[in-house]
Image (cartoon, rainbow, N blue to C red; front, side, top):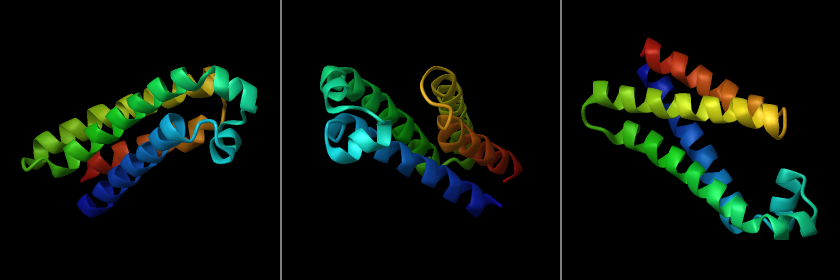
Length: 120
């Protein structure tokens, strides 16, 4: 179960690195516009805010990676649980305020990973 938990945490970290790239660097590109359902005009107007949001997603990914590479497995699990909880809460907030599908892209995977980490 430990390997499965680590794979899930790693996948969520990769997802948040991808979201970071979309928000920080690709926000106004066709890929970014499609991913977030933006018009070019609204994307241009919100580019700075999106980059800031992307930076926070990068911090979530960094925290999850820190938990994975922490040599003391118990401390690593605690770090992973904290950052997974942050991902889950951010997903809940995003689902309520922005787009319902965020619940299934962000919150559900984080909760599944939290369960796996607890069982590992």
